[in-house]
Length: 182
Image (cartoon, rainbow, N blue to C red; front, side):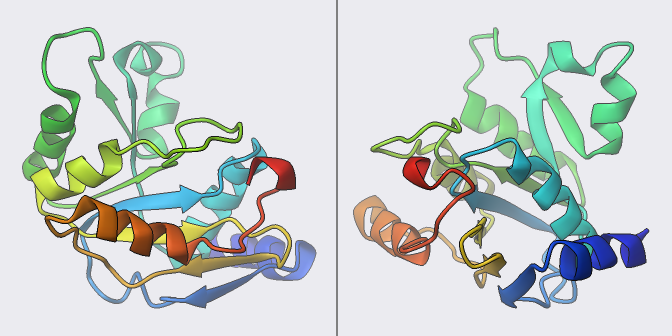
C-alpha cells in the first residue's frame, strides 16, 4: 500500500516532504507528534497518507466510547487508543501511562485542539511529552506550498515560554487548507 500512498501523495496531489524525512529510520519509537495548522478535515487523510509515505506507525487517543462496536476495530487499526475522559484521573498522567505501557507509541495531535482559528494553543501535548519523557516532533500541513515539513525531535525543557516560542516559530508562515484559520 505504500506505493499507492506515494503515488497519490507525490504524483496525484503534488505534495512533498521536507526536513526530517528519515523519521522512520531514526528508530524513534515514542514521541508526541504535533501537526499544525489544523484547519480542515483534509488534514486527516493527508496525515494518513503521510504516515504511509514515511512508513511510520502513528497513534492517537480518543474517548473510550469511540472504541465500541461497530467502529472500535477500525479506530484501533488506525492506531487509536481509548481513554476514559470522565474519570477524575489526570489526563496527562493517563496518556503518559500509555507511553510507559507500550514498546512503541507515537501520539499525533493538533495543538490547537480544533479546526477553527485559535489565539492560543493547548498545552496538553507539552506536559504529556514532559511526563512521558518523550520528544515532540513537529509536522506542518502547509497547503499553500503543498508540503509537510518535519522537525527533528525536540525535548521540552523547564522553560515553557521559550519552548513554545521555538515550537510556534517552526510553524511561522505555514498556511493550512483554510488559510484564515491558520
